[in-house]
Every structure is written in structure tokens, then in C-alpha cells.
Length: 124
Image (cartoon, rainbow, N blue to C red; front, side):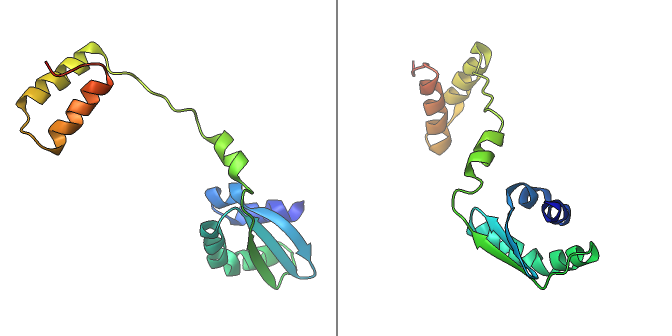
């Protein structure tokens, strides 16, 4: 649809990827988004979008926004890059063990203890 391309050109990138044209009727466009946060932002942008679309030749009086749960959940989950994890090497674990010996009891010392326990290093 040409209107989808014109709307995409007026939106910021995050909204552009998640917003769908649900319906075009008379002089009204209904946009669908997956949650209320996107809907609120689109409602703020609606007057500016209407002006931009009118400048592109669309005869619109209203841009309505509807929330449709689950609309973008599949696409957004798939577009996330896989998590990259690098395990701590022996040198890093030795540095944390040395640090643990220098810390006073408290939240930081407990966090270092948990980190070392997670990596199989027990307090010696």
C-alpha cells in the first residue's frame, strides 16, 4: 500500500517498524500498534503525520490509533540479535578472588562471592 510507505516515511524508526495500517476509510486512517506506549507516542505525532500525509497528496482528516495486543511480538522477538556471552577466563577469576580478599563485608563482597560461586570458585 502506498499509504503504508508514506506513513513509514513520517515516523521515527522504532515506530515505523511496529506500526501497521489497519484500515483506510473515507478521510480516516486507523493505525494498529502492539501496546499503549506506542499508541500514546503515535497520538502525539498524529497532527504532524496528518500534515505530512496531506502534503504527499492524501486527503485525511483523522489518524486514529488502536492497540492490538501481540501485533508486533513475533517480529520484535525474531529481530533481536542473539545474546553473546563470553565466560570469564582463569585470569579474570583470579583477579576477582584477589579482590574478594580485599573487600570488607557488605553488598559488593557478597556480589563478588556470588560471581565466584557461579563460576565454580568457592571461598578458600
